Structure formats: C-alpha cells, structure tokens
Amino acid sequence: MLHPGQSGAIHGGRAFEALGDRFQSLERQDEIISADVLDAWFDPSPRVLERLREFLPFLLRTSPPIEARGLMSAISEARGIPEDCILTGGGSSDLIFQCLPRLPLESAMLIDPVYGEYRHLLHCVLGVPLTAFPLHKEECFRIDTDGFIAAVNSSRPSLVAVVNPNNPTGALWSHAEAIRFLDAIPPATQVLVDEAYIDYTGPGQSLEQEACARPNLIVLKSMSKVYALSGLRVGYLVAQPVTVRGLARWTPPWSVSLPAQVAAIEALADPDYYQQKYSETHVLRHRLAADLARLPGVKVYPSTTNALLLELECSAGQTADRLRASNVFVRNCDSMSEHFHDRFLRIAVKQEIQNQRLAATLQTLSVCANT
Image (spheres, rainbow, N blue to C red):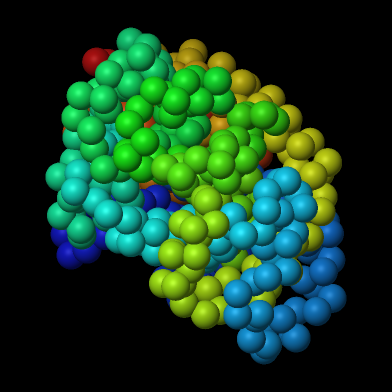
C-alpha cells in the first residue's frame, strides 16, 4: 500500500508539509501537533542537552569513532549485557535493513497488524513468502501465545518478527509469555523481537539478556522514541556474539554520528529522568484516552506505550485529512494491516495542552457523529 511515486513503506511525519521540506518554517513547531509519528513528547535528559550545547561545533565537524565502542560499553553497563552481544546502528530501521537481508530466509511470519517496514522489506524488497499471524480486535490485539506457538510449529517459518509492545496497537506481550513461546518453537526458527517501546512498560519486560543466551533470538532496540533522540538516529541490537560478528561485517563505518553517540551515552547515564517521563506518559495517555473515548463513534484500545489506537465508525483517511487542515497530524493505519479497512487511527501521546487540543479538534469536527 504505497503512495504514488513512493518506493518504501508508508510512515508518518507529514507535519513537515507544514514546516517546509527545507525546514524554512521551524518556528511554527508549536502550532503543529505531529501525532502521526511516535516521537517522545518530552525533551532529552538535561545531561544530553548540556553536553551537546557545550561541544556542538566540535561534534558537528568531527568524524565519530568508527565502531561506536564507547556507546557499546555504555549500553553494556546500563543493560547488563556483554559488549560482544551488542551491535549499534543509525536507529532501529537502519538495523532492520542491515540485519534481515543477512539472515537465511526461506519464509517468514509476522504478527498482523505490525510496523509496516517489516512487511515492506521482507516481502516487497527481499521477496520472502510471508505468513500472517492475525491479532484480533475482540482480544484488544493481544498475542495469543498458545495459538502463536501452534502456528509457528505448523508452518515452521525461517523467521518470526514481533514488535513488542506492538506498533500500532500498544499491546504488550509479557516477558513470561514470550519466554514460553521461545521455549516451545523449533530452534531453527529465528525470532526477531523489536522492542522500540519496551521501556515505557516498566522493568523486567525486555528480552535483551535472553538474546545473549539463545542462538535463535535477536532483540532490536531503538533509542529514538524512549530517549527522545529520534532526530539523531541511534539504536542497537542484541544477539549471541557469533550472530553479532556475522552482522557486523555488513555494518558501514561511522554508522552512528558523533552527536548521536554522545547523546546516547548521556541518556543512558540518566535513568531516573527517563523513568519519571515514562510515568508522566502513562498519566497523559490515560487522560487522552478518556477524552477520546467520550467522542461519538470512537473506540479507544488499551495501550502500554506513548500511543493510542482508535477504531472509528467512519473513514479514518477522511478524518486524518480533516484534522490535517487544522495542523493536527494523525496516522491512518491501513498500511499496517489489510484488515483495518479505513477504520483505524494511531495517535501519539503529546504534551497535555496538545492532547487537549487534539481531542477538542476531533470533537469540533464531530467526525463520526452522523454515522
């Protein structure tokens, strides 16, 4: 499902239509609600900002360490993972494109709905036959672990890819259920778990340490969304050392910029700041969900992340278009599942005043009042 002339997966970020493709109207940022991408509503840690401001000219003109060894060391210390289990990259999407083409893929299974880059790369680019494991709205799009195990054991795909918590649904697959799944499927099936939003769900949910011990598990981590570093593009994956060494051969030098490496190291050193912001995110999400649930023709699904999935009784595409005319940008989710049928929107949690404006704009439009 591509826009005319588009060669890649569909993403959000249409707010730059208002800011200008050459960024000539950045001063308008406060007029625009960019809720169609899941960037953090909060700023990076003050430690990050102070360090970048102090050394910005140097950081901009200087080539970074080729392999980001200092960043790997900081990740290892913060996450309790051996350094030889870590591979850094310019964000999780960069690592997806580095990693998946290097795996032995004859077939793959994706949960449905899911982040569209996986379907695009596996099917449209690599030509891998795909099987979908459907998630059902009647179950709030949660993964049925027993059904998932049965599906994998029946079709035996080369790869299973899961986003957890899922995007666009925000539903969490618990650590205990994920372990039960990993223990029950064929060892030859490679499992990639994308944990871009896992930090919002609290401690003890990540499979990072499991990935160091299981030959068939790769865990992908973005530092963009949960550390408010989306503009810098930095992420990493965790796997057994032999897997990391094999993938590292295909990693270009200087794949993580110097400002990104410095910012990520400082962010990892300030966990208390980010934990406070995650707690505030949950409060903001609950308030926004309550406001949206009061609107006619709108159903809000439970979420554990910085986003909400809405089901409408009217056209999601038309609703997104009408909101865009008011400089409110939300995501039509059709490209994330063939079963959404122009009825689902994903909305990022923003600051309180922006959330209130978003809900008020939807109410003013009375988008589904007459359906």
